[in-house]
Image (cartoon, rainbow, N blue to C red):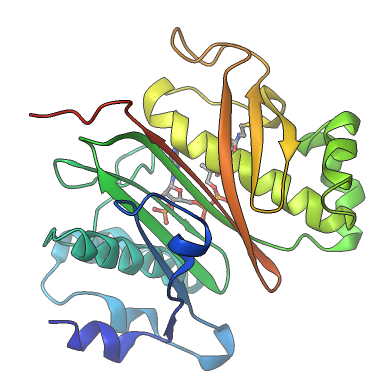
Length: 246
Ligand SMILES: CC(C)(COP(=O)(O)OP(=O)(O)OC[C@H]1O[C@@H](n2cnc3c(N)ncnc32)[C@H](O)[C@@H]1OP(=O)(O)O)[C@@H](O)C(=O)NCCC(=O)NCCS
């Protein structure tokens, strides 16, 4: 069943869900695809999926490669849940369209793609992000737009390297946005949440303003994280207190 996938793939990175301490019913798939290997993203396009082929037709090479790597991860996460499905298409606002009963999240950088999927009976929000280490020369330019001085001080205790701290903060906030956007449907900039605690595998973000009626200023969300050499992967899983039975 996996033959065409395995043929096309550069390297699945196993067991990160366990290292991130994600709930066991959240399926995380991570794919490394170093550019130097020259993988052709077209090899990942499932034959006969015309809707997807139309979607990628006008994308540039880099965008197509990353988009398809994300879709490949999503497909594999769905398979791990026992869901046989096409690659998820994208809605107008770029949200992936998941099969009924599933929610998920996708992220990619130039050499790593990641997807997380889980049953809607157990979870109401998922957000994942992978980010390459921000270069030291960029740190000064972007740090004010990513976080406040007090946030960077909060991070410095756990992560002395400023570039790493900022990369983690950036990624955690993107994961938060991706988790909550499907619920609030509003754009929020990086000052709409702040870090209030950071430990070796997780941190806590607090909303600094109302995101919706339900997501009020002061609400806190835990973000799991792990470093893969020079990339950081952040993940948010929000479970219902009780599973929903349909
Ligand atoms: C939407 C956003 C988070 C995507 O991040 P990115 O760094 O461009 O790219 P990533 O690879 O990490 O994620 C892209 C994937 O996220 C998904 N996505 C896109 N928009 C999304 C949204 N509004 N909500 C949830 N997921 C979204 C898509 O699957 C997309 O991949 P695809 O287009 O190949 O399908 C980013 O573009 C953005 O708008 N950020 C500003 C808002 C923000 O993060 N605020 C912080 C609040 S504290």
